[in-house]
Image (cartoon, rainbow over all chains, first blue to last red; front, top):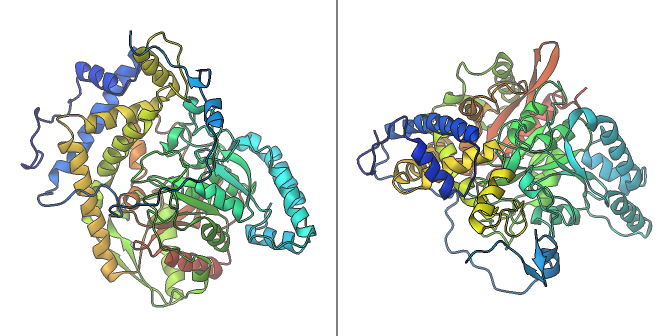
Length: 109
Length: 483
């Protein structure tokens, strides 16, 4: 099991990801899937989560996280205007545009 | 195109051959070869005019940059002005780069001419290039086999003699492993040595740009051109390494050690022989060999794939179909976004986005993501301890030579296991160089084998001393263009 410094609302078990949870993940990730994809990926994810649980064997008490391999802090550069592509070039990439603005589906009814 | 990049640059400069002739020869080679290999997704439209410009500059008596006129292939996740940059995904099928990645700008400044963009696993997720939304890339040594991945197009282009040099990216082995499977050199530097600005992000704390070549001196010249600090990448390091200078350093007295955990029964017989061969050759040059155990490496696949998928789920959130990526024409905002992502991403991208979303979600963050980051530190500490006693660590680059298409298509976890030798370097930020060091015969085909050499953080150049010594001592025996 996971070492005692971690607390989770649910105990971790090999079939962690239920159908309902799969729907929740799809929603969080804004990812529409077919029924066949959902079912296949649910199986894959449960296998992966099962495999990942081997990490709980390792005692990491007192070990700090290593989010980046080189631990740099507070890298600044001067805020100077340099050459960049034009707003027109950016707009050329737009899926849809109108009068120099990006056009997107309605967000607020 | 059997000449090396440095030979071509020399011939162009001495007017033995024109840059235009070099470019035409490379394009002809692509025309004749790539239908069966599938390395390129697109060819650059201005390669010939850039070559003419090199010849014109030479005719005017201008001093040319060091690699002027030499063709280079770019992985299709590197922004190059005006080129399609798809990242192997339908999501970016029509995206044309409005700017250059720093590495591309530096390659151009060194005189290199991008000839085309190469195939990759979608958003650099995979180990075989089979996850490209557009095409398969075939291993030039046996076209029924994969070239490795994710920089499989770049590796196949160099291995089959279409270009002498290529750029790739390496998140968990994506430069080193295809280099090994295609029989060329592939290098991933210390994290921060090469700018990531303008590189389409996969997993930002793991991604590094790397180079591929068929000679150590070529690879060093390429790295000298593209490495060094970039103010546009806040993770970029200040000190500029000197790769070419390192080629002449002797390996005599250098202390090598095999990583014990990488010597298991999972390695093919050809890999075991190649591991033995590098020892014999390097000991003959005065190096010593031992074995060292890094116990935390047993957990590297689990830690890596949690961190990789977590960062992917975050980085790929930007592809929402609103601004420049694929958009599904649904009437409302939320269904447009979900459908755009459902249509634009392939299955592996979806798998990793969902896995990463899970690992970062409320209630599971500590058990998965946070735990993996702690294990990552244990792995980095194991390496640091080993480097207190040894100068260079040695493992296979891949447990086997290239495998057949579809071999792991029903078992993603088994595919992930094939990355066992490479991912720990990305977790710890270490430099690694895969060197062709043997061949293995399978079903009547000769397949190349790569051995990985690992140096401490910021000691990247040491690996080039090793590679050059091995290349010279073996008379480039393992650096052949694929038949």
